[in-house]
Image 1 (tube, rainbow, N blue to C red):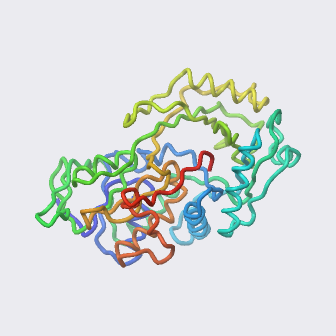
Image 2: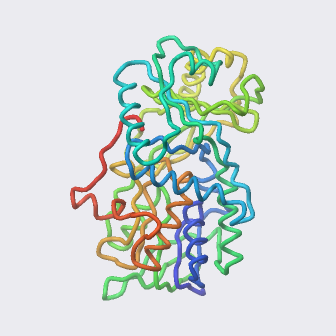
Length: 387
C-alpha cells in the first residue's frame, strides 16, 4: 500500500484536525487511517458536545480560548457550521468549599482573559435555569460564552477541508503495529492490509493510544474511562437555550440536544484499562431518579433506554492533553490524553501539533507544558477536583 510523509492513526476529530492543519501548513502528503467503518464511529460520535473555557489551570483556559477563536471562524475556514451555541455553562455549588474552588478557578480564568465568567447567586441561577430545584444551592459560576458544539460537524469540516488540500482518509483500516529502524525512528505503520511507509506518525487514537505507543516501545500514560449518557424521549419543556448545568460537588449535569435531554453523572470507575462501553441499567435508573429530584419537570420525561449510550474518555494522570514528540522516538507524535476535553480542544490541539511537526515548536501558543516528558520531569499539572 502507498504510505505517506505523515500517517495519522485515528480519524476522529483530533486526527482530522491534525491532518487539516498539517495540510494547511503545506504538508502535501498526509494519510489518516481509522479502524472504524466511517467517520465518527469512535469516541467523537459519542461526545456530548459541551464547550467551556471555565477551567482551573491557565493551560486549559488558553486551549479553550484558542479553540473558541478557531470555532468562530470555522465555517469560513472549512465550509461547515460547527454548531457553536453560546448557551453558557452554569456551575452550582452546595457548600462553601465548592464555591471557593469555583472562585479560585475564576481567578485563573480572569487572569487569562475570560473576564465574562462571573459568580452567580441563587437568585441569578433561578433566572438562568428556572427548572433547577435550588434546595441547598448557595451560589455558582456562569460563563455566557461557554456552550455547546456539534462534534460530528467539526469532524466533517476538518476532514473535508483536509481532503480538499490533498490529505487522504481511509476508514475501515486498522493499524496492527509500528516498524522501527536501527536509529529508533518509526519507519512504517503495519496494517492488516500491508505496510504503510511513513516519515512521521501521529498517534491520535484516543482511549486506545497507549497500545499504539507501546508498539514503538514507549509508555504513554493514557487509560480509558467509561462515561455513560442517559437520553430522554423527545421533550419540549426545557428550552434548547438552557445552559449546560452542572452540580459541581458530584458532577451530575444535563443539557438539551436535538429536542431531548442528556443526563450525565460520573459512575464509579471500572477496572483500569477496561474498554467497556456497555450501559448499566442500574446507573440509568439512578441518574433518572436524581434528575427528577433536582429538575422536577423531568418527572414527565421518560428515558429512551434504546438511545442511552456510553463512550470512553482518554485520561492522562493530570487530566491535561499530552502533545508533542514521543520520548526516545522523535518521529512519533502524541495528540492524546485530553481527559474528556478532546472535541472542544481539537481546533487548538491540531493547530499546535501541526506547528510542532512543521517548525519544531508551537508558535500560536506555548505548548511545552503539554510535552510528553512532563511526568518523568516532575512537571505535571495540579489536578483539580472540579474544573
